[in-house]
Structure formats: structure tokens, C-alpha cells
Amino acid sequence: MARRRKGRPIDGVILLDKPMGISSNDALQKVKRIFFAQKAGHTGALDPLATGMLPICFGEATKFSQFLLDSDKRYRVIAKLGERTDTSDSDGQVVQTREVKVDRGQLERCIAKFRGTTDQIPSMYSALKYQGRKLYEYAREGIEVPRESRKITVYSIELLRFEGHEVEMEVHCSKGTYIRTITDDLGEMLGCGAHVTYLRRTGVAKYPMERVVTLEQLNALLDQAKEQDIEPGDLLDPLMLPTDTAVQDLPEVNIVPASAVYILNGNPVQAGTVPAEGTIVRITVGEAREFIGVGVIDAEGMLAPKRVMANQQVE
Image 1 (spheres, rainbow, N blue to C red):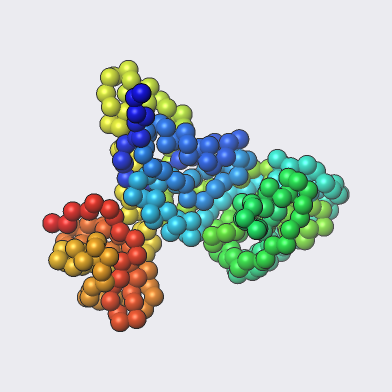
Image 2 (cartoon, rainbow, N blue to C red):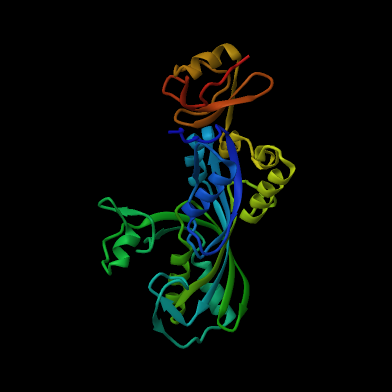
């Protein structure tokens, strides 16, 4: 019996423009198959309704995906006033209909209340877990469980359009912010209810929206490779961003090659100028500033490895 091929050991990040109507995991599996990647993971799920930037990490980049999960996000959202749904978006069932008596001034005043750091209670239709099960699994069974509020920060929220019962906004927020919950809370503030009808993620960390690619584009390159009888990776791999882009927001500590050997073997080293104790840093080596991993500054001011690149050769 022939052994099944496991895929290519590729490293890097692809910025997928997730289409509407499929889960983030479905999108991940499609991309993983197209690239024939040995290992892949996404960095922060988008609802089936949502579209937009979904960074997918391959190989060694999966070690650093948590830093993208923790990064800021940007969204474009359209809400419909007058209807509240059980999921706070148009995929759910309408549970309440109310008359809309809202003017632009009232709307802008209510939107302004979301700016800054606030407490948000996650929706029952979220992937957070309670006693080992995801909240949406309870919600689908009609069970409501207690949820703890979480601190979120909305750096900016701007009204782009207010026409009829439609409100379009742009939001820049911290990790863990549920746009559906903001929309539902806004509807209650206005006294008419609201739900999300359109949601697009336009930014994760500092990744440029210009680098996103669609499944259609990836499949077209796959077909092109077959027609030209070349390796698909020759056309697909140039679309990947380097592994260290997942941690581009972390402060850098550059070390000499001799110290890198110790770091790669799990040992702390002394470095030149280092940030304060407890700071998570990006570790690079030599004049070429080759990325080898992420570390933390310990109590003695030493640079201690936290996650490092496997099989890394340092000159």
C-alpha cells in the first residue's frame, strides 16, 4: 500500500481574502490543499458571513500565529436598524422588530460611546469555550451559559454612511472584539435593535490589504502550473510573506551568530541593549538580521528563547 504524501514543508504567511459563506477552517483547508502544505493554521476566525483578511501560517510560521491573534484588527461593517437577531447578524433568526426613530446626531453620539476601553460580554454565538464546549454549540441547543465580560479597546469607530435603516461603519479595535456585539449593543442604545448584514476585515496587524489573494486567484495559478507542466509552488510560493512578518510589531533584539547557537538550543544569552524585563522581542542575527525566533527578557536582563525556528543554520 502506497504511503500518503504529507505535503511540502513550506514556511511563511499567505493573506487570504476569505469569501462569504464558508468557515475560516474550511478556507484554511482549501488553501492548505492548494499549496500542498505539510502544516498550516489560521490566525483568528471570521464568521461565515464575514469576508476579508485571514492570515494563514504555514510550517514554522504557525509557531508565531498567536502574535497575530493578539494583534489589532480593522473592519468595515454594515448594520441594519430595526431588527434584532439571535446571532446579531443576518445568518440568525429575527427575534424582535421595532420602529426606527433615529437621526444622525443621535447615531453619532451613541457610536462615540464605544471608543476607548470598555467591557464587552461575548455573544453566545462565539467560539469561546465554557466547560470544554464552544459557546455557539450551547446556543444552537437553546442553552444560555454565563459569560465573563472582557476588556476591549476600540481605537476608532467612524460612521461612513447612514441611509434609511442602514448604518455603515469602520472600526479599528483590539483582539477579542466582537463587531456583532458592538452592533447589537448599538441597536439597543438606539432603542430599535440592529444586526450585522455585512462584515469585512480590512486589516490584521500591519499587513497591507494589497497583498490579499482570493481562492479563485490561487486556483487559477494551480491550473496555470498544470498547463505549463511546472511545479505549482513556482507560481504560488512567491505570494507568501516571510515568517517573521507575524511578529513584525515586536521590538527587535539583534545578536551575534555565536549567541544564536545558544538561543537555538534553548539557552538564555546576554545581548547588547535590551528592553525592560518581561518584554517579548523578535530575535535577529548578525548584519543580515536573520530572524530566528521570539524571546523574552528575564529578571537578570538576559535574552531567553521563547519560540525558535527549527533546523535553523546560523552562519
